[in-house]
Image: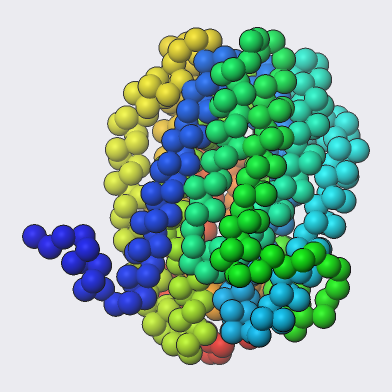
Length: 450
């Protein structure tokens, strides 16, 4: 039998670049997700299913909503621009990176201050289902999550710079906040309050942002001294594409808050239950699918830059089919091992056998999304490399409509399981839409589409 190295050598260079990048990302993700899993085990051991975990889950999702939305929209459109910017002169590249860093910091500071000031109203509107103690803890946690908004934006830009160079170490550093939280929670003398979660979050996000900035500067060969301005020739294209992409990203960004709002109104500890299941599911989603998705975009953008749009399309479709089959296999295995996995990771300390049964039931319904999630990630990268952002935004709005409707109908009947099933139906819709669009060859495959 051929070794893995021999099989890779026999692939077309573009497939090989994606495969090699995916293996690196998967390795880093595996290490990172292991740190995340240990963090969840530590939180479950010290806090169980409690008000503190309800507050932490609610605050994490709601406070990260806007910064993650911005990073999600920006990274998709920024990576193809950075790939093309590699051909710029050094002064032009330094000017673009400096202006990008300057506006990132400015927006991040404004966003951090705005989140902190607005949080009492967020708790009043979206946190009505939380009890008084959980709401008090959520307000305390904002001392960490408001500055984390700035660090998240800085991290997102640095990660995009690294991915544009087909360097994926940023994936490993995604685990830094989880690792610091793990250490803080386990070393805390008591866990009567959210102090360990607060300080672990703040310090973890800070270390991650600084570390990634240093690595991005090394990859590009320059820091990109922050400055405010729009003098780079890349801004018109980036701003136009980001505006279109942000519409779809905003629509999809409502999924997390809607889940938190729905869970908060299902009763005490529903947020914590959904959170444990979601974070365990994210281990599979990240290692299995994000590895290929993150590796594919810079390669597909480079193929388009060479003028071979048909090859990019064929490459993405092949990877999508393979990933969908892998997702189906992961769903079957995960369904059978759900109870064991939850018990292995969480069932100790304050986390009881009854909690295991509840979380495993929610997890199984979430596993149904795996084939569609695995398959659609590559198609998302294909359309991004083609600059078909209007279509992507329209699909995102459709996905949100499906999710909102399914939450409304399923959650009152099924509880947290219904929230997870609604997510699975949303990704099934997403894959169907992307597959139809991907099979259709656009009349103009140039990179000037938006």
